[in-house]
Length: 569
Image 1 (cartoon, rainbow, N blue to C red):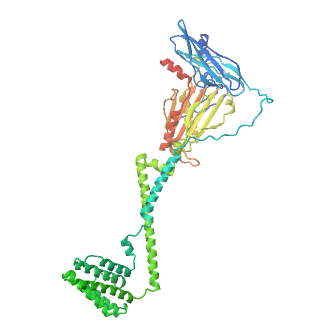
Image 2: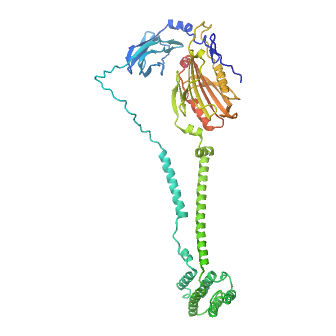
Image 3: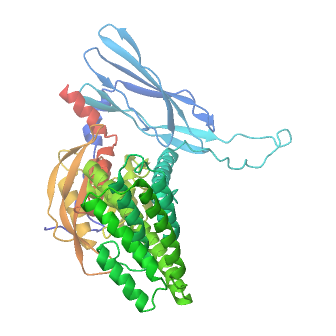
């Protein structure tokens, strides 16, 4: 990219590569129009009090075939237009007499000048005379009117926000999730009958099982096989838990042999008769279950009582548990409780993580995973995009623009040799080293005295202005600029030049660069050059959307627009 340097000298001063001489020589061109002037402007008073309204009246006489365009907006600055009245039209022969009135005011005292206003009649542009007005202070007689302190600031209640709805919804979801986790996992559930029986000591469980056997109808229905099956299971289960841990799967002979060995080894203090009684009942039960033997019901009852008695005998024969065994049992119970608690924690964590993943996937499929991630983790550009935007006017003539943050005034240095010839205002947010930067500048050049160029005023070349703006970016450390240009039209039909493309933007306090994009908008009117510069990181979808939104919000009143529309019509 080849760019020209700024040049300043006394004989032929220039701004943005454009000479001052010849830029503002309208007088020669506009003189014939003023000689045939059909426009007059008057005010109803040249002296008003602060805040008092004056009426500015423009009167136009023209052919009925011409279309007349009156000024609109705040073109009367430093006076403020507070009302624009309807046009009063009367017809005299083949001409129209149009009267347009404006209500103007000023809230500062002093002498002010209402600037010349442009009136478009057909294809010609007419200018009114500038008018002087004096705004006087209101004299207050303090002897009759008391003075009061300034009233304190009154806090204004903000418009209601909807954040509480999202907070309420979040609390409801969390409350529901917590309740479900408590109810199904952490709640101490009431024990079922089977669970209560399982917690009983082996002896009590065996006694209870015998009582339940008595309540069955096996004997009344002569179902001796089922009766003996449960009866032998009761004694085998008790022996399995307290004497021999393989009593359930052992045969009758194996179990009896084991009991005798334990007795001979003095590990259990049970008599031979007790062992013999158990053997007799077990073998009778085997005959009933496998040989289809049918003993008398009374004998079955007697066997039941014998088993009841032998359970008592075995309990008394068992040695008392030592303190070490009791301690081991206590530790086992504690380990079981810790295990249950750990399992509950694992299940709860798995459910919460699963719900979080499901929520992330659900919102990701709907809104995009990048958007959900940035919402959770946070993204500076996203916060700017979704924050409260500010729409304001900057510079004079004003440019209306919407930005995520208020643009703050800068005071760029201007060389002394041209300071008297320039009026520059700059408002900015961020810089080229940050994720997003916005700069708005207005350059107003005072008309220069000297010979006029042939052909009248020299038009400002926005392409040269764009070249100088590119050079300014390079001076700020931006490199590898890819430049594209196209015509740009604002929503209110003001035309300008759009320069945009990709570039390498510097990383602050390093010699590194990151891929970025930039947009430059340039406008011109008479002795004013206006520029909007935006830079942002490439690939940042939020910053790109911010830039597009800013560009689409730009509005400014260009005086040439009305004339061009008239020519097209």
